Image (cartoon, rainbow, N blue to C red):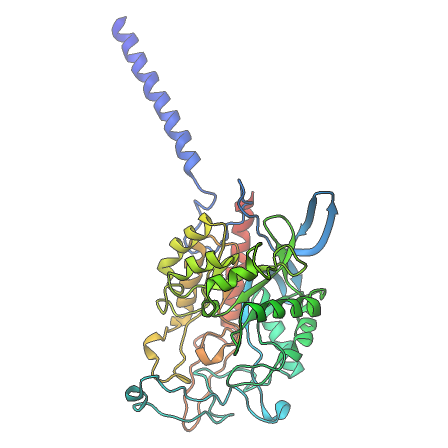
Amino acid sequence: MARLRKKACIALFLFTLFVFGTMMGLRTLKPSDGFSDLAPGLDLMPMIGGRMDRRSVSQDVVSSPGQVRAKVVLSNSGPEGTIFYDVHIFYSVWYGNPSMDGKYMHWDHVLVPHWDPKIAASYPKGRHMPPEDIGSSFYPDLGPYSSRDPDVLESHMEQIGAAAAGVLVLSWYPPGLADDNGEPTEDLVPAILDAAHRHNLKVAFHLQPYRGRSDHSVHDNIKYIIDRYGDHGAFYKFTSSTGNILPLFYIYDSYLTPPENWSDLLHPTGSHSLRGTPYDSVFIALIVEERHKHDILAGGFDGMYTYFASNGFSFGSSHQNWIAVKAFCDGNNLLFIPSAGPGYIDTAVRPWNNHNTRNRVNGRYYETALQAALNVRPEIVTITSFNEWHEGTQIERAVPKKTVTRLYLDYQPHQPEYYLELTRRWAEQFNKEKETWLM
């Protein structure tokens, strides 16, 4: 009997241990477990214990004492199908041609010389001569177009909608200012907003560096943009940690301004702070070097993005660093917004920079970048880019092209819209997984 009781006790102990182990194992399963490693997704669970609940929203707001409630809209239906407001895509409007602008702009980009004269001497000089010779390794389906062409703008909105990206991130310069190879384009913003609105797209602003940019001038830029465009139906906003609906701004090359200057603008106690004013917003800085993450935090930014589509080009653009950067952001209540791109080749404008070229490998490079973004479970993903043709990061339609002096790259064996379709397939799968995660 004693021996039977001993065996029974041992059996009961083993059974209890099995049940306990099973329960603990179930508790450690993440909502994503069981999904394919290649399935795109997003961690959009509400933050707990003081963490932010940052979600894309519509502008439908119902206020009550001490509370701001927003109708959360993570996706919408446009003419080209469902679009997703947590997929943002960088968009440029600096292109021009003789029929619309009296001359070519950007398509005739100069060949940028290397900063070392000895190296520069080994490479060609001059500028491109459109329409047969353009400043890109690919050739656009629309030809060397003008960003002012209404038909081009409509086509671009259709293509962005076809890619399911809900927010185009517009490269923006203040009135009268432009990059070194273009002319002012701020007057195009109303037409872009109207075109985006027709396709249920939203527009966020990507503040570019310009001569004299400072925390004071950015203060004025933000005020100008919000006063002028903040009530437009296509102006992008999303919820803050307090539930307020705020605009979102990307600040390119933010590291050019010292963090102590940014803190005067972005800390609540700053000398000309935007916090708590009608111009308060969500400000996203560019991380290039590792030390920038500490500067971004000290400067009072709300998050960081990586932009560059060349894996390994910088600390920020290196996929292997994204998990650590995301952990830093999580620990400091910051957004981390990785940027995925289909490839990179800028040798048409920087002929000495072939070591940063990243071959598209028929879409596999893009999928690898998207998977790397998925692995860190960000709230927003950015796509670099819709139409940065100089750097070969575009997903806009491109076609095969051969001239006497040039043989352009293309998307073959796939069709011109392949990267739009690939972006949509990823975004749709990502949305399905997101819904399962929220359940």
